[in-house]
Image (tube, rainbow, N blue to C red; front, top):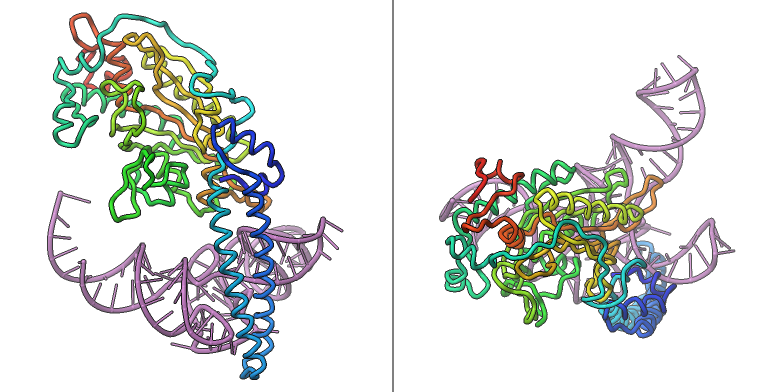
Length: 414
RNA sequence: GGAGGAGUGGCCGAGUGGUUGAAGGCGCUGCUCUCGAAAAGCAGUAUAGGGGCAACUCUAUCGCGAGUUCGAAUCUCGCCUCCUCCGCCA
């Protein structure tokens, strides 16, 4: 959520920025609740003060009948006022949490097609076999049995393709730990507070993309970003420890509700996939620079694997609530003749951290909300798509990108 | 899953209805002393929110949430977490 003080100071800006993200929030109504709640708060605090004074006046002696009568009166008034405050507070919180993080100033305004291409690397080749046909022919991929066992869009990786996935994971892991990220395994289920605090849809809502466990306050994670954000919830981190860099490896579970009409063939969009995620907690003034660093790392990693790509600065309407800025790294698909999302990295500034109460203690003692960022190192299912499309031979074999060969017992071809 | 025990400030730890945001100790910060350090002494040392230009002030917080009471860290109920033992299990 946003700092209410910031909204009070910049109501027009917040309204405009929310609109640019496609969020319909009534800032005037929010500020109305804010005013009302503060007035009630003062009433309540004044009544409490009177009560405290009365209690202090009795000094451990038995209070007089008069004092008890006055106390009862205060108790009843306080009860009423607290009740009113509670209901206003609830409405206020709902509205406050609905306000998205404003997009950064250098984010293009617009929707899905309005992202700004920042750079292109590598050649736009053409003519390759679709990854699903290719992998199925090799008996590397089985969606039919995935459907039998779990449902549509679930799958088995088999044999060399499963080994290739493992090799990519190992390579990426070596890469990110070499760059100073601390490797972590994470809980694959998180509670509602962490889920919503990270900015993912409430568990029970219809549009939710998350799988929730029945009768438990638990949902399956959609990315390691979620448990990595919750990791430092309610903590105050010393300034000297920032930035904190983590890398979380986990399966990701997504219902992919409402993705009809989008690119869904084969492994590109599935209900479960593995992903190695980079994550950073930073000082507010660091987050812009670290965001660029995350992008640079993604580029370095994918360049080393020889995959052509472009970088897109995602437009405001496509950012989602928590991100102030997001870069997508899109690989060139010779099958589709188009760029398709491979990784992305987001700067969520203080939005997630304020939800989950994650702060920094400055050297001078001041306390501030930290910034959080996340970036994909490798999303395994999509990585396999990209590599199959770019490394297949006319004979139906798959060359192994050189950096991956050490993790496949030195094999150059599968 | 069953039985028992426990949750107090950065840490340890007192405190079973009434100025207890909370004794005492440790740690930390500043000062005094010292050539310097240690030791010792003195002072300070939470977070959130409201009001105020500010000095400052008010409110809340003793795992969380309800309740009893004029008044709750203290009593009651529910929940959570941790520890010990038993069961089960990769």
